[in-house]
Image 1: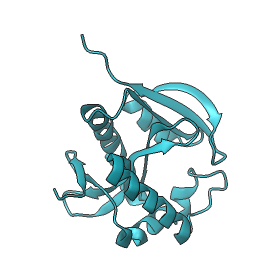
Image 2 (image 1 turned 90 degrees about the horizontal axis):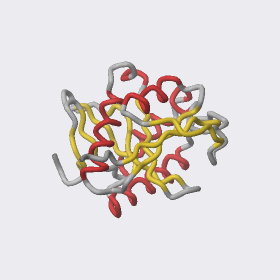
Image 3 (image 1 turned 90 degrees about the vertical axis):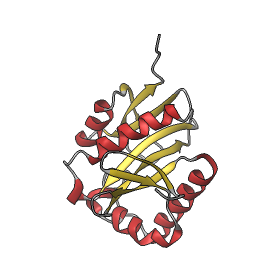
Length: 175
């Protein structure tokens, strides 16, 4: 691991971004099949939109070790997508999210990354809970939230205009 690496799972390295990696993010979110569940319009991100997101994620990583992180496969160093925590603007709560290139769908990488993030969040004392949400039409993403133990709370239109199923994960109580 290097200074940008946050942690590893069995098959993945989760690390912070650098501005020179903007093309990777544009390739990911510039894909209409990836972006369709990210905003109400479903439009692919422009380079300018990706740059704003990247700068936000870099800042969150440097200041709070949060932000959406790069997902790199250990076996071959392939960039496969992003996963991590943002801050949900209406409430200020940490919010888990992920997006992977289509070639890597169905291999369990998003669930592995999300479970690793869940465990890291509480191990590193980031808070008592975090939220997650996905477009109500995105069955695969909703299944990941449930697979990692999140509980459904409500359906709401999020600031980007998507009707989303919201979930919460609270710090487990041991005793």
